[in-house]
Length: 456
View 1 (cartoon, rainbow, N blue to C red):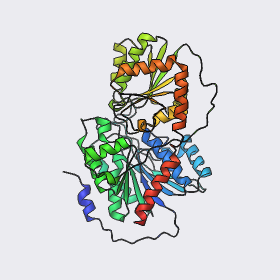
View 2: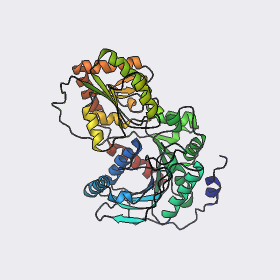
View 3: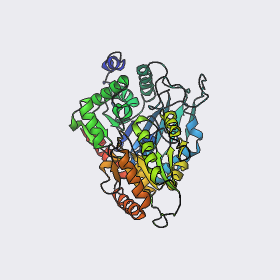
View 4: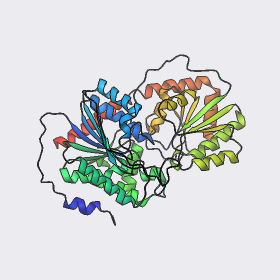
């Protein structure tokens, strides 16, 4: 990998340092991620949250390291305080967070795009380091400082700087395995594994081919491939993702374990879910990017409206294709039927599901698709792209369609909107199928991988 600074550094790392032995049998995990609620830009933050909570219930100790533009903001956020309280009351494990100053806080942000928030261009916000600690069986500690900004400068340099900071702040920590989530964290994981001799596990939630199709960012691809080759085990969130890892990155299939994402099962009311409304609602929820297929959703909406004029379509989310998609809607004269909400989080997401009569996920390439499980949990019938990992798990509980076949997509939307008995049957089948898809099940599979590597 030309110009990649980590290779030469890793080659000089010594593994002959002092060996620390554990006094207890508790598994200790150094987890590297790039987002965690309440600061999320995609499904990975939700996945990290669910998996981490489940691991703590198993008694696993976790130090969660993540890049944060403003680490101290985490301390006062009410949603995080609620998260901490939940962990404290229901877990026997130990969780700490280490927020590290970095501009690499969202892999969905375009290189050179600049600040995420409008009106922040050219401004830099400096933060004073701050420590927060709550006592209890599960403690949450956040330390950090940083600046607002995008992927300014050389991407390799930014990822390398972040890897070095991770090594610095964790040099006195005790852990048995390293678990790195997605490409931003892979170099840090490689460096830490070289310094400590601990096994590196990487979890692939999405690849550059999912995000960019064939027009990949070569620097990101190189980092992904380097991480896959350097790790001991690769966790893929679906068999679809495993195939991409094997075929596009040249990785041995024996090295890749498939552990599907899960969901926190909620017990909802099973009666009174069908509300008679003149105007039906079809929901799209996700980043408005090429990967998620917004243009195909719009095409299908146009066909549905030719037959069912009392239908509205909600596009919840934002992304680099959002302005173009808005123009597409305006050009077709659908501005009064297709609504854009912008990015939603927390309770606003729940409200969006409760408003929906049908949920459509028309993704061009979806490694998993947690939103489909969330829709099902909220008793919304779903239509899935066949190009999604979650489609592997729903044989009867979802309608499936090729993302490009907007005619069939429209027909399935119409069928669910006009045939309530069909929608109800699909809901019931889906609720049965998602019962085993829990974060507890995923965490137990991860723990088996940890134990296997530690014992080896």
